[in-house]
Image (cartoon, rainbow, N blue to C red; front, side, top):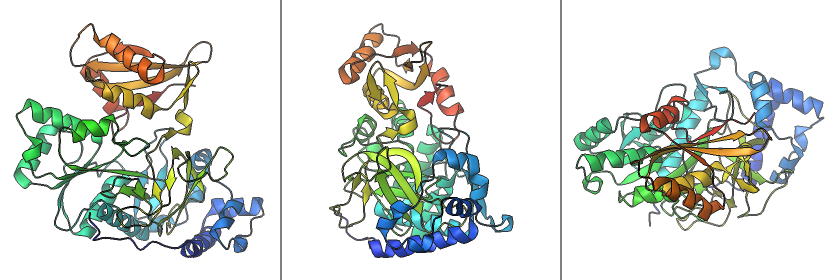
Length: 427
């Protein structure tokens, strides 16, 4: 067990002081929160403890979409960098960062990647984009430089190039999207490359879940680990949070960086849920200058774990994301989220690539259509796929079979950061 690094975990009293400082900053610099505090007669001087956090209003995604220009707290001349959200659930939102925000971002990834066991002795293949206004890519790079690790900025895609760099420069760690790791493995198999005999010993997975709610590997995680004997780590983050939750070697949830973010987990009514119960993640940034958010409802459903981790760190941990509230599907009486569909599809070995689509029929009911490219055109494929769905969720979606090139064009053409596996076409 690696116990060489332990976070200095803030106490609740320390978080309360950080919250008061952030509230003062918002009251002095944020046109949006100045207006909200005035309209709702909120006296921030009465917020003395973490329990008082519930006296403050939530910030919703709808409010962020509508009022984000008002949320900017710095002048144009103090904007050091601009990023945008992925736009998964709507129009991408710009976030402007100050020089201090960039330093905070570097510190965030320094801490997060250190939790994953990356040290100055490592050489890291960064299989994530650093351009296209993507926050995470530059955060990984700055964090790795702060650690002192070597970095190879290969970016996403191009399996042949990735393996060439692995062979020539011997990286010990890869940071990338897990579904792309499967493409690397497929290329390796087709070209006589044995991944187990390469220098890579660790993969930090971004953008997609590799674990179930009980922390066991889901089918995506299993398909990687069964073919590549590496240490596999999950990480969860978003542009709005400007903070990451990363797994240690125990794989029991992403550790919260208590000095960078305040978290809550709430039910539909905004009331806190108990440890281990599914609720919506709510975040308050600490130390963000450009566009800090107060009690922002992320829409992501997860579970909290407050008991100390076996790695020795006592910070709160966030479990795997169960789904997103706005992506909930009511299909033939069954409530589903896209991760449940992905879990089934990742288990079916005859499927080479896929994406799912949800739309509403003429009666206003949710319908699911799976677009799949199979390894071959075996007539048994249809029965195999539908039997899997019936066994797992007791309902069968429509399945459309397409060429791999057609599927990949949709998966990689609608979002320039990570492959798209779910399209919500409901109006």
